[in-house]
Length: 356
Image (cartoon, rainbow, N blue to C red; front, side):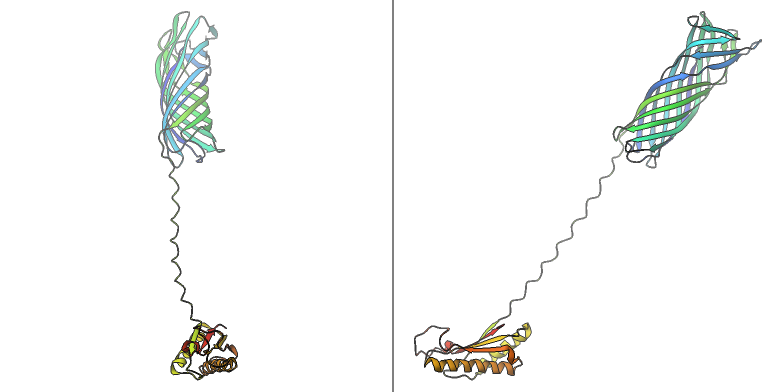
């Protein structure tokens, strides 16, 4: 007996997987090949007296191809086409058994299934699958006993399968899979027998399938690159330039052989006092000087009187007397070097040093 089945069916594959698996969302193609064991097929004759018939088949290869789409949510849907064939190894009718070489022929099955499968990730590259598919098919039988046709004809029927598998990601675009599938064709139609057309009715055809295969994802969009880091904040504006340092030294000039302050000298002292208050100077040193006219002893006393006059005016304008020190240097530190006995106006002075 030879059986041929074409099953047109639908499959939806729902894959719950993590991005660690390679089967990212997008269109894909798949191909698988493996071992198919067709179980014993039972039936009966329809012409009196009706008797039971059975047929056993060899295990053989099965080939499957699929095309589908996977969404971002993990749902993928595919249409799967397949083919397998088997040689008849033993048949019986009414308890009479026939084997090779008297028995020749076999069965082939072509399928097109729409599958529903769930994939779970169990590691960075590994995943497991559970699901199934349904469809319709066309079945063809041709078998001979001692060269005489015993069963023949083509019919259509319902086809379904259950799927359990293991997945391994090779890359972003390719995933290997290993599946176990139980498939069943519920043909339920009458075939031609040795007694004429539609004289044998066959039951279900059940298959155990071990399958290895690969899925290629076609041009799925690569994950977008991470956004560029935000630009660094603009550098802070440069600090304002420091204010010019406060003037710390003021010079008061005197008339010849005098220690009292002129109007101009009082203005200079007033400016020095204001600067000291504004910038917080609490120590002041006033140094008196003379020109080279007269003795050193006389000029030393004159230089101290000039310093004292400046101090008195600074105290009068509000500075603390305890913070003002005075000293005299006679003519030993001239602003303009001269010989003895020279009336040099720039040497007749008192120097105010803020900050001591």
